[in-house]
Length: 121
View (cartoon, rainbow, N blue to C red):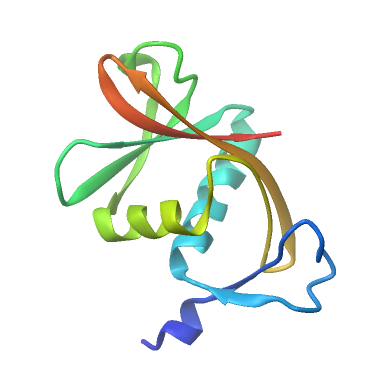
């Protein structure tokens, strides 16, 4: 399948109307799906890489223990890298498929393991 078919529109906070929208990779569509789930559950998306090839995705409070997190999926390391490359630390504002997403990306440790946290605002 061509990459163009898997792309979504993203804009920065100065271009919410999408006039200069850029095409972005499947990784942001994946992130958007997880952000929707986090909004429904009123919690954060937590990504942890347990192996070099797979990143596990959780919902929950990263301040708690790993057992308190709910595993909701696993994505390839390359897709996880795409998510990280397409976002930045701190507040992000993106429009994907016409839906605006505002979230903060931060880093923490859960039970001594590095984790990336996406918190919706």
